[in-house]
Image (cartoon, rainbow, N blue to C red; front, side):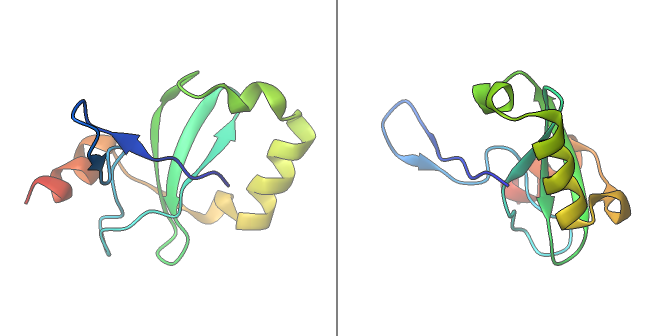
Length: 92
């Protein structure tokens, strides 16, 4: 369960760079599954994959730590959506 802040080249904060929940337009951060990064909305049980090896923190987590986080969120019950759908909301 990680948070990230992305800034534009001019130094301004870029909101929702990695997409948002299709139902509420928010995100609760991301978890790592192996080297893959999954953003999610806990309230609506939505998740979307943004890529692998983008953030180095996955290297610091053991498989057991990743599994603990996955299970604590109940991630197996989350509905997967496409990143393209989650970033479209931010442009509206």
